[in-house]
Length: 420
Image 1 (cartoon, one colour):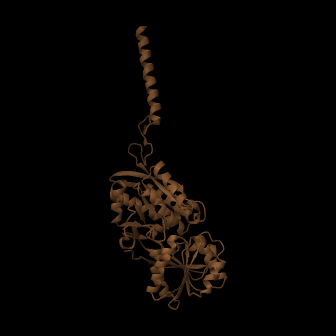
Image 2 (image 1 turned 90 degrees about the vertical axis):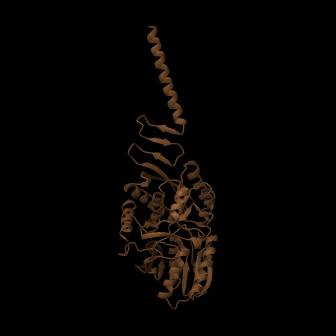
Image 3 (image 1 turned 30 degrees about the horizontal axis):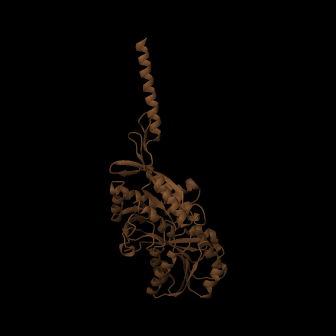
């Protein structure tokens, strides 16, 4: 009887210790399931999958999902999700022989630098991500650097104006794959000289922000270098809804052509209003707005002589892999435009940089990225920007010049810009 009592007491102590250990484990940094299949480190950007499976790499996404810029932000976010699925379906990211699948953590960066910083801070401090893709606004991109750079978090920007506010030697962890207005501008102006040799007087119509002011000065120099004349430069608020007074102001200068920076809904409004008021000259957008989106907003009848640095996705000149992503977007969301497709490269090239570095150490990934060649939906890409931005963190990839002519559009050619 005494021996039985001792055994019961011992068993009771073992059960109590087991319960205590389980309780402590729920508060610790690491927990392991009973089968030992899954180990998760609290506050870590990686998760160990079941034996023989791939680990999970968390990657942050900052997108304007509310406000005017959501017209581009929501499609950008959706295509980034499609890209993550596609990478995972094709084996994930290979880090020195170890496989990782991607898990996206998406945050709304809103429309202001403060909201952008809040979104990035949450991803960095709470979710502990080491890699972020996203951001359209150059002001938000510049502000977020204040939290991402000290944390050595790699960012791959979706967009920008092409000023040193966004990329510079003091931002060693910030990269951009998409080509932006600064790098489109010279090639589009060269096309203009070829296509409209008599149209020499140009008015610039740019979004009014600090990056837009810098870009305007740069484009003015390009215009002069090509023997053209800058009639005037007009800056307009990004929240403009009625373009009538702005276009009236443009037309008073009697320009032969107008060169804009504009988000999709803004470009549609500019084009529609200009044609309604009787302006007939070519209108360019330095922002890579989807030609079919612009055509839809302005209406086919009013979408004449409009040239954008983005492809007609129905053109036979579109590469096969891009066509595949077009179909994936249609299958998943029932719609597609260039605003869906172009952010695909940001996540894909980030994944290639991680593989090239053979490590998740962001300093090593940055070093590998600066000098590598890579694949994009448009074909092949290299890195540039050392002379232009002071750092070799801008991708050099082909872009399409497309002309909208009423109900039809034509992908005229693919061009690879020079970004030294």
